[in-house]
Image (cartoon, rainbow, N blue to C red; front, side, top):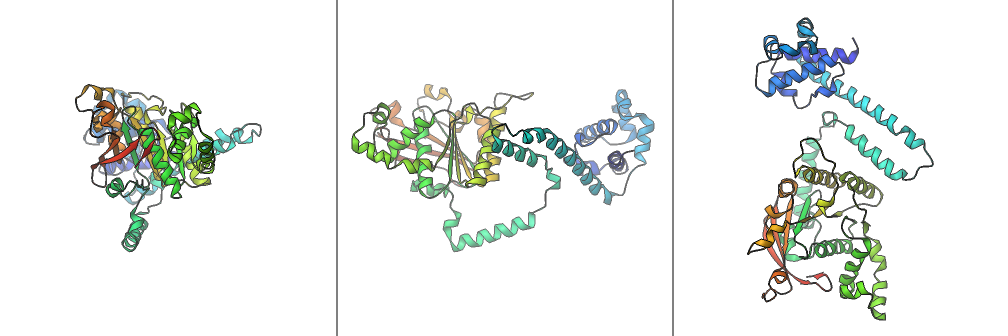
Length: 424
């Protein structure tokens, strides 16, 4: 019997000796870790008994899985396994060794898969290939093998808390410069997923542009993944804001010499913001680029415009919101890995238009269940003058901080100059 098969047999035998052990390792121990088919099938049966809260015994296995006993070697082999039990103190070590062996096998397979790609000197995109290999390597590392950093985390938390009492600015995230909003959020916190939702023409892109430009002016490293607008369209809006020039004048090219001069003075600033306007990209692509930027240049804030445009391959038994939920989870994890804040723009369903009060709620977001489950903060935008030209709130943009996982909610009103895309 191979060493791994012996490990598997000893682990399974331990469950027969002490069935309570199954509950302790049910999350860690997966059938895919087992190489011997009989062992893999038996673990599935044991986990099924545990899931349905049935007793684990030879009698119960034979009763429940009578028609499938040949898949686990028959009663004689089960009896042999039951006598293969090891001391409880050795079980954790055996499981860890089994998990490590599986990880080594996957690592070797991954190296083999990428070997020819790395040897092909004629191919382009080496950095992208390296990022992809790096990410897949990280995915191989089982959580069970990761170092327990609980004590270090507590010490780090305490040190940060002490430093914040000495310097309150350390508690601040990515500030917007809109004092009323910053008082509520203390800035957009690193590792958080922030979602900004609104109907068309409410000012989503203007808000995102303003936030990323103000962050850049404060020295933060910013990346913008625009799945909707081209780089040229984004530059038009940024320049309108920076130079106080009507957006329509920039789009039409009807500019005065002094306006051209003002624009030329902002060219260096525009270069500071990484803009990727690739279409049809996946969450994996965005996450890979985020990690590359973090490693090469540093990264503090990411904008994704917009979440529903991120491609997510369908999986079996998907419902309408499953793909978006996975996208949000992957982006939030990347934000944590890169220690940056991530702002995702979101559509709001057209149903809002049929209501008398057209201010959106969280439930109006396209894929609201998926977004609200994952997002740390949710901001909803509304401009009354879009629907009511005679409103006293002309030029007013409402930002409703509808969800904040670790802070208060509230509504902030800002001045919005649509022509120049400026918000104050």
